[in-house]
Image (cartoon, rainbow over all chains, first blue to last red; front, side, top):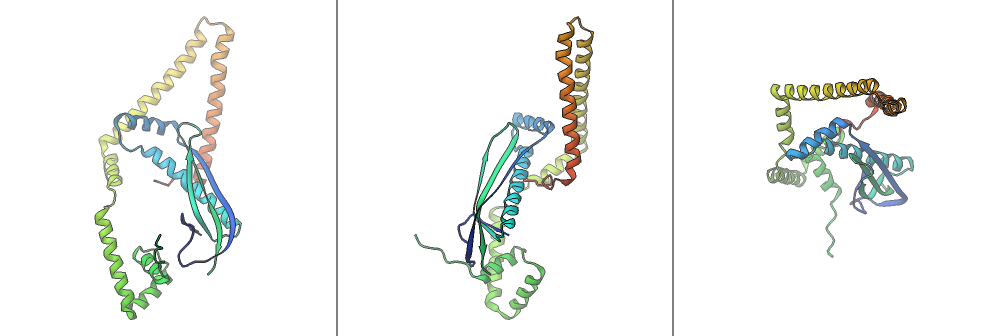
Amino acid sequence: MIVVTTPEIPGKEIQEVIGLVRGTSVRARHIGQDFSALLTNIVGGEMEEYTKLLAEAREQALDRMRDEARARGANAVVNVRFSGTEISVGAAEVLVYGTAVRLGE
Amino acid sequence: MAEQARPTRDDLLVMAYVDDELADEQRKSLEDRLEHEPELARQVASYRKLAVLAEQVAPPEPLDREWERLRAEPSHRAGVGLGWTLLLSGLAVGVIGLAIWVLASDLQFWAKFTCLVPSAGFLILLWLRWRDRQRLLPFDPYTEVKR
């Protein structure tokens, strides 16, 4: 499954546009990680706990989008975009969407 | 706007080869071709030089190694363990003490009920959620994602 942010894939021809596919994930850390992040907030530096949280949500959302594309018979997703918002404090929401297509060999 | 030249199939193969992303079969097939196609071999050498240059321009982030080194220090591990033990045991003693104080206080029954029963309900729900999380944790493939 090829996943790209571009509308085309060099060297490949889009044979069929299947449609919009998307994946969403909202994940939270436990309170201990929030406490560690609070300490980092005091002294500065990267909040690794939240970097990891966002990365987990991103990968899960991407996998869900891929699953949907695969289920609809696509072998690539083009024009992929990421979006995020805040539903609750300390949680990460990631929405990823793109256009599922079928590429020629 | 001028359109960039699209990479050929060989360009993409060579890029993937230099980045060590080819499957064994594809890699062997390309290596066979490299022995007989000097132009392709020149292209591989050129991309390898670019890869070295890219690493020099943007060296790998040393942060992970430094964090691992700091976390491996015995004083750091002991400090983290002691800190969490003190914090959690202090909180647990505080909650238990508060519950005993409320029970032993002169508060009316309804006030005791309002303080303790919802707290007990909260703790039961929290424990159930924690237990579910522990059960599902082995099936969560995203816990290993670092960044």
